Amino acid sequence: MAVVATGNRDEALDIVQEAMIKLVKRYGDRGEEEWAPLFYRIVQTTIRDWYRRQQVRKRLLGFVGFDGDGDEKGVEDFADAAQPAVDESVGHARAALRLDRALHRLPLRQQQAFLLRAWEGQSVAETAHAMGCSEGSVKTHYSRAVHALRDILGDDIL
Image (tube, rainbow, N blue to C red; front, side, top):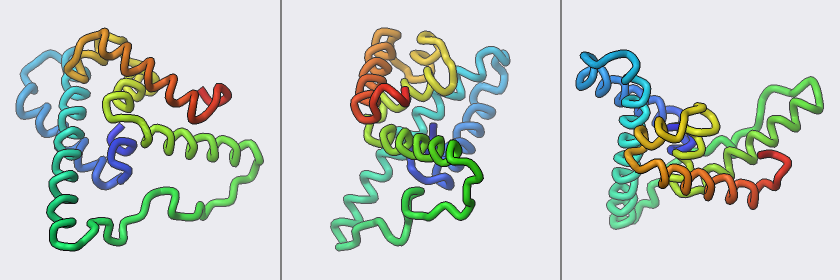
């Protein structure tokens, strides 16, 4: 989830590590059954904090005349060094890349709801707790995400 939200594996690992440290420091005394929902909620909060810091950084760097992009490149900027052995592998890789790009086009809350529900397999209640919102909001965000992804990707991928 953090990789999709940030578009950068290193930033995502920092977010997950920060969330794990917060979980241990603040909630280590809680029961194991509470850890997963708490962890996802901390990750979501940390991602939102990261977005806020990025916005401030962009404003500051834009003010001094630097665009802030530097030499960082996204996944789509690099050629795949490994040659797939089967045409089917190529199709799956292309579909995964299309899905990744489509996920990046969604608003953050829709990304979170989709990833927690579809990829992590969480229930509506667990997702609501992790996102810090009502179950109705989760259903709305998830539904909008699925519809937007279907519009972008077509029915064949979802």
